[in-house]
Figure (cartoon, rainbow, N blue to C red):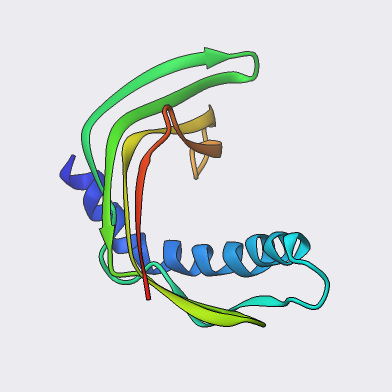
Length: 138
């Protein structure tokens, strides 16, 4: 378990950068499309998961086969209590997300195992049940 959490910690700056990209390129346009005419919404300068990485507990690994080949599945409990910071500006005001807590059963699948690096063709990550999410807004 320590190896996976050490890997998460080392990758956290890159995961946070990915989060920033997803928020700006996917979430912001989707939110804007929901706004009435004349109302704008955008993420501000800060859009980060912060420096505290998620922690995976009770990790269970298994191998399974699909039509396209063998895959590895990790089932775990995700526990994230982060120091994220997301600025959101809207025509009618602004808010800051300064805390995010996510707990739930997460599944990480390394799909279509290969003989060459990176040794799998893709990654699927999803919650097997609805996670518990707590936001701190200012």
